[in-house]
Image (cartoon, rainbow, N blue to C red; front, side, top):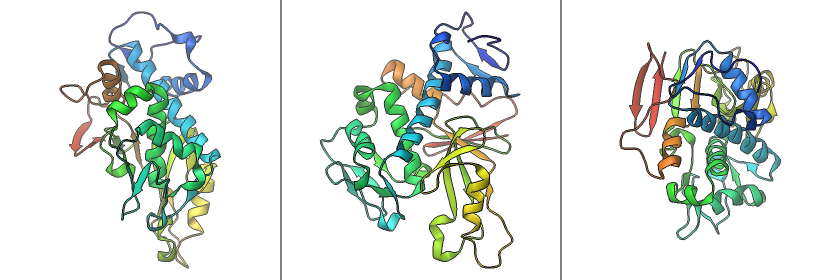
Length: 282
């Protein structure tokens, strides 16, 4: 990688960026987005920073791979899964079966997609787990996530999701939401679309595919109540796994004694923890 390395990205440990030349093209693209941001990002080491880049890139790849798989879109009421790995619950979520490796079960969704149908919120949590799996490997994933429950990323605790509000920037691998406030009740499952940001103005949304924000809004607007003039829109919030937390897990193999907050939480920001979620307010 050529050019400046630390502008708004601050590495507490200092020193040269070991391993910088080993970054993939996708990881470098994410770095350039973050480097161009006016936001100050602080990391305890280069390894912690590179871990976030790898995981963000892995989440993007997992989203693209899910789009290429044979999974189908379905409402929670009509969801289905491979019963060899998962038990479908009454709310449409999937609970990992006893004596099944979580890594095998997540990978099965990609390998045997025709046996699966789920809502876009479930697709997001699947993508996030697959991204983590491909970064940390089967053994550690099975240890850390032995009791997987796939329902909605809004209810997940294991990844310690962080949501930033009020002007937060989105980068590759972040989760965002297009809201459709005037959705036709007959198409209530299209009251919004959960998406993974792949690149500037390029998103993956289960049931819509990989496309631009303009096309997602156009799709949702076709599913409004008759006569509505209120357009669907991209909400001003950004969600991602707590990269600092997951990095600590991967380096020690155990949860940290005290939960680290995201590197994006800085001066002038309010941090609120609710259950397994963290909200950062600008």
